[in-house]
Every structure is written in C-alpha cells, then in structure tokens.
Length: 433
Ligand SMILES: *[C@@H]1O[C@H](CO)[C@@H](O)[C@H](O)[C@H]1NC(C)=O
Ligand SMILES: *[C@@H]1O[C@H](CO)[C@@H](O)[C@H](O)[C@H]1NC(C)=O
Ligand SMILES: *[C@@H]1O[C@H](CO)[C@@H](O)[C@H](O)[C@H]1NC(C)=O
Ligand SMILES: *[C@@H]1O[C@H](CO)[C@@H](O)[C@H](O)[C@H]1NC(C)=O
Image (cartoon, rainbow, N blue to C red; front, side, top):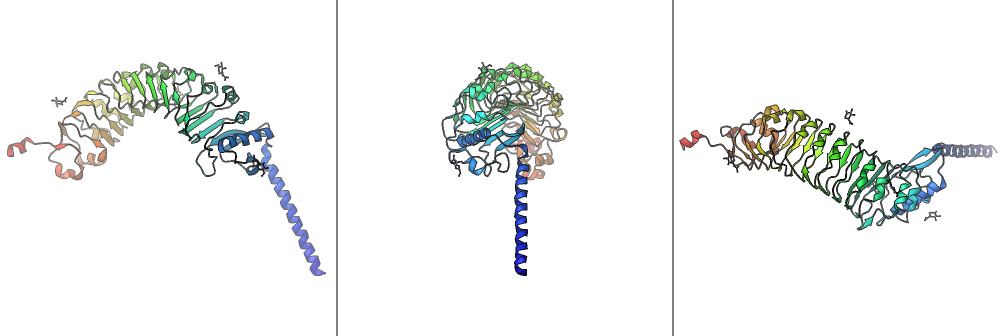
C-alpha cells in the first residue's frame, strides 16, 4: 500500500514534469517566433527558389519547417516586416560546411521574384558547368526585386557566359554590384550610370570588351574595379566626377590614351591601378593633385616622359609607386626623397640614367623594395651594408651595365653584395696590376 502510494506520487511528479516540459516547449516556440509567423506563400517561394538552385532532392518543408525561426538555413537571412518574417538575403554556394551548394545546372525559378523584401542576392561558385546564362528569366521579372535589392554579387562562376544582362541597370537601388570572375562578354550597358546609389562596382575578371561607358552621376561610388577584362579606348572623362572614389582599378585591359586631366578631382582616391594597359602621354602633372594616393601603379604602359614633372612632395602618402616598364627617361630626381612613407619603388625596365641617390637609404626610412633593374643607371652604389641587409632580395639593380658597387667594402658586405652588379674597379688597383 505504502509502496503503491509512493509510486503513485512519483507518477504524479513525473506527469507534472512532462506537463512542465510541454508548457515550456510551447512557450519557447512562441517566443522564438516572436517576430511573427511566415506567410505560406513567402515560405513556399523560398523553398522553391532554393530547390531551383540546389536541386530537386532538397526538401525544404521536411528539413527546415521554420526557415526564419528555429530551423534556420545557412545562407538565408530573414527580417520582420509588419509582424511577419520575410527573406532579406540569399546566398548560394558560399563554400562553407552545410551551405547551399548549387546543383550542376542551377535554375532561377520565378518564385525568386516573389521574395519582395530581398535586399541581397549572392551566387558564388554556382554556375560551374559550361555555357549557362543569367538572363534566362525575363527582365520584367527582375524588376519585381528592384525596389529592395541593394546587393547583387555574382562571383566565381566559370560557366556563366553572355553579356551583362540589361535588367541590371534597372535595379536602381543597388548599392553594391559585384560581377567578379565569371565568363561574361560583350560591352557594358551604356546606361550603367543609372545606378546612382552604387557605392561599389566590381566587374573584374570577366571578358568584357568595348569602351568604358560614361559614369556621370555615380557620385557616391567608393570602389570601381574594372580590372582583368578587355576594355579598350580611353578612360571616360566623367571619372573625374566620382569625387568620393577611394579605389580605381582598371588594370589589365587594353586601355589607351592620356591619363585624363579630370583624375585630379579625385581627392580621396587612395588606389590608382592602371598597370598592363597602353596608356601614353607621360606622367601628367594632374597626378600630383590626387593627394590621398597610397598606391599608384602604372607599370607596363607606354607612358614615356620623365619623373621630373611631378612635385612628389604633394604625394606624401604614397606607400607603393610602380612605374616599371613605362618608357621613362632621364634621371631619378632628388624630389623623390620626399616620399617618406614609400615602401615599394618600382622603376625597372625604363631608360633611366644617372646615379642612384644614396640618400634613399636615410631619407626614405620605410623603403623596403627598390627595383631599378634594366635601366642605364651608372656610377657607384654607395649604400651601406645595413641597407643591403634591409632590402635583401628586394633590391633590383642588375641590368645596368655601367653600375658597380663600392669595392673596398666587399669584404664587409658578405652575402649582401647586390645581385648582378660588378665591383667597381679602382684606378689604384688598375695601376697596381
Ligand atoms: C518533402 O517531404 C515531405 C515529408 O517527408 C513530403 O510529404 C513531401 O512530398 C516532400 N516534398 C518534396 C518536394 O519532395
Ligand atoms: C528599364 O528602365 C527603362 C527606363 O530607364 C524602361 O524604359 C524599361 O522598360 C525598363 N525595363 C524593364 C524591364 O522594366
Ligand atoms: C573625402 O574624405 C573626407 C574624409 O574622409 C570626407 O569628409 C569627404 O566627405 C570625402 N569627400 C568626398 C567627396 O566624398
Ligand atoms: C648609358 O649611359 C652612359 C653614360 O653613363 C652613356 O655613355 C651610354 O650611351 C648610355 N647607354 C645607353 C644605351 O643609352
């Protein structure tokens, strides 16, 4: 009897416990989804969109019954509008564990365009099989996203071909457009400048051709990267109107013409990289007006001219200056010593002559790479052993037939004799011999 009562009591406690758990659980559930429920249509659109990208075997309703709540999906971000959950960001193929990897032939389903609050769409390493197009959906469909879409990132898709779809210039709320390392071809749409809210425009690593369109009106643009394409013609003069610009990279194209005067308006520019093009017309004085420049890279162009026309002291923030293989003539002016922050100075493969300024050692304290190889620098190198140590292999002086290093110090230089340069022959030695 006593025994029985005990078990009965125990039983009761247990029941209470279970009841507690259940209550707690349901409470937790309502708390979790405090943001509100998700409309069935939004949820179905999300599942279908993902299924299109990752493949039919992906069963969202089974695996992720509450995609914005307690069964979150990697790569899906939600937010609450009017007490309901909506999808705000979608990211495919982000290469993390359990991220949404794209199917062999991903399909953009029309349900994508029902996600009315989508702000960000990212397709990374998604179109990998050959010959796939982005514009398989009509342009009007994309307009359904134009009100909210701020970020579009299409990156590392080696199978993605065709032109930059024209709908993109109608996504007028875009702040970041990144179309990086795909196989897109053809010219850019002329009206890119319609995207007046852009802060970042990256079209690098495709096969775009034709002229760079005018960019009037992109006054908020901070980063413009057009590198590694086949753009030709000259830089548009409207570049000068991008006065917020911090980084301009148009390297590795077929661009030509003079560096436009208009560049001088880019007072906040920290990076100007135009290497590997066909620019000509010398280093124009306007360059010195870009007083915020930290990296100026113009190597491998047909610039010609010399280094004396620039007031180097107005570029005192420069850390990297690369003018290798640009057809420069004349001497290296002493004014270059004003670049106190300079770490990398590339002047190789030009027609520079005269002496290498000895005070580069003392007056450019940050200098840790100096390349003047392949010129006609002459005379004696007068740097100290410490300088050769500091530079190590980052001192390129070879290929200057009339250059030599100080003979007397050869014993002390040890392993640090400059590569590819002979010891100076002393007149004394000559007469002794
Ligand atoms: C997903 O799984 C559920 C339950 O297992 C099933 O009823 C449903 O048909 C499946 N849906 C798809 C699209 O496979
Ligand atoms: C894109 O915008 C232009 C106006 O700039 C308009 O004529 C065109 O119909 C738009 N395209 C779509 C697909 O809405
Ligand atoms: C340039 O940078 C300064 C300092 O960061 C900033 O105050 C200014 O607004 C910028 N100029 C433009 C045109 O964006
Ligand atoms: C190199 O400079 C020397 C003078 O130091 C000059 O005599 C010679 O002609 C120059 N060589 C070339 C190829 O310009």
